[in-house]
Length: 581
Image 1 (tube, rainbow, N blue to C red):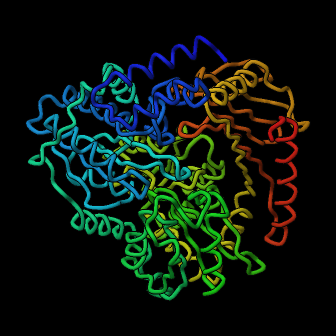
Image 2: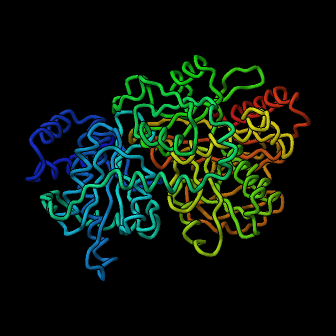
Image 3: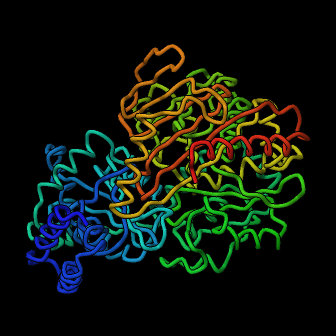
């Protein structure tokens, strides 16, 4: 064991023991870890949680590297201090606060609210659990300067988190994120935080915001006449024990769908997620009960949202009338194509519209954009960067929609984060549109591939927990960065994009060009056969992610299965060649 590191974490742990406002139970746990001098002490205290792509997120427990009342409190005090500097000219700074169904969510939410009001900040506090995108909406609707939602999104049950938002309703980005961290680092003791709330500055919100949000969603409907014809289309929906339980069915009803089936076992709001190992709609097991219900009722569409309802996974019937799960890229392709097609049919395209996608999202989207004469922006992973583009173009260009491969989608400009409630309604509308033409969602997607090319992607996530895991991930990135392969699966490496260096290198000519995006620890290898391998450590989980995308021509729907098999083998060979397991 690294004795210097052990000494460092022990000193940090002892500082916590000396704080008067740290409760006895927490101190007892800290003393136990100090006495054991093991990995638990190191993993809990080797660093202070920082804002990543999704804010503050981690395993709940004791320590500076854990989500608990005290790390939440320090982050909130730092944000308070920064808000009071940035908005010093305001008579009253205000924030909106929400929480999802996670264990300790209400406790953390009340802690945050108390600290804000103790610091003279007005708080609009939701009366019960709410989806993350509704918090984004509420910030803009109530003209707040900031907002917080207590959530760990799709992570396993031991996690919780803290997403911070700015006055535009978007997650906080540079320079504000780093400036807030600097304010947090100035707080050396929990004893320096005023945690005694002022009830006079607290206002409960609920149904008024729900109704305004649903009405805003309804304004996005592009083909209500199609829904009217297909209103009996069978939809199965599950919130996987989370916040979508009321608002997703409500949004579908508001759009005009009359035949929505729920999954009763998963309508139960529960932070332990008793029916799933992980509440992540990216994982097939999370949709098992919904698939069972879909077969039972012979559904046209199955949808599942994660706990804070910002991601949605779907299942549809294939050529054999069997349910298959779409990945995030497939859903994005289908949804964006529907939006573009509908905008064109309705005469809404003027040449001033745009889409946004992340750098690891399917490359079919630029082809779709080009064919409809619509601009498209590439941004770093994290929906806050999509929101940043929307903000920069507000009032001058029109945002049609955008998304990321990790099951997050958005349309319109009144929400500034991925929105699964919105996505459920629009995906259902797109499915109704396909059905109105005598096609299933699956058949429509294959038709898109025939027209634009077959794009096939896969994500491999490797989990490496704790301090040792973080070190191993860093070493992997160093290895790929300093010793890139000349070939992968017998295909020459033709371009390297290093987003940390903000540099793109043409391997064949050696010509370098600047990448005009913020620095980020991401590498992309572009191969001669048009395959793309992207490598990045997760900003919210102890994982390193390998995104592999490849493509081929698809001459007809009858060749779909054979083409998928061929591309799947190509991806397998790429991963094997790179020793990714």
